[in-house]
Length: 279
Image 1 (cartoon, one colour):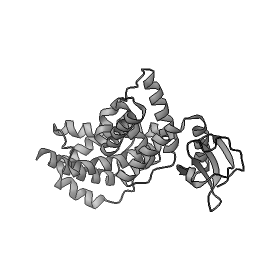
Image 2 (cartoon, one colour):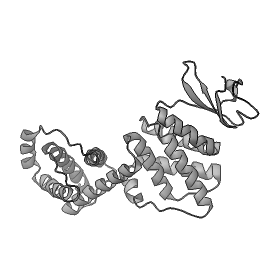
Image 3 (cartoon, rainbow, N blue to C red):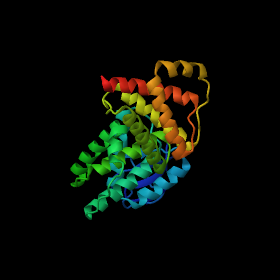
């Protein structure tokens, strides 16, 4: 491959077999090289193909200024996340996570640690992503000889969640807060604690994630379940009354009215998760 642009000694811009621009990394890859020089493939460690031109430009700016070890770190975390979650992650995570890890590690070396106000909720609502965050802390300790606090595992988890939802970090924090608020209304209404290991709790939280995402995006569900809701009101009366409490809370705080369809599915999920938790 031929060098089209040198970002630093370890990173170049070139093109693939389809003449698409790619970012290529390798230790000392461009040392004493010039634009137009040939780079043998056995010198290449990583190749990045970013589909969004805007993200690609920002990515190139970032890795030109940050040591290669941080890019390798975030790439390892992202690879683990993709394998363990089995989901597509937005390319933007290569920018956001790399920048965050660089800042977090450098900050920790100066003795400055930032508290994650939503750590407890992240542990509960994004369990798989948080596990990946904890594994990342182990990897960081091994490679960088510094142990970051669990707060950072929470921040890593949020970056992974963000890359799945294609939302910005601020929106993800809002979504997490809404999930926490609704689960609290349900817990206080029934006076119970959830069985957080049950599949019904997982389904309930997953449903709340999508509901909260619609709420912050101001996109309501189409309403076409009136007949079934009438049946559910009778069959799961207590759960429906609980959702009416949720509706009042959401209306008061967010000026958003639950549709009948949203009430229907929330009632069903509440009935299931509460029944499992009581048992």
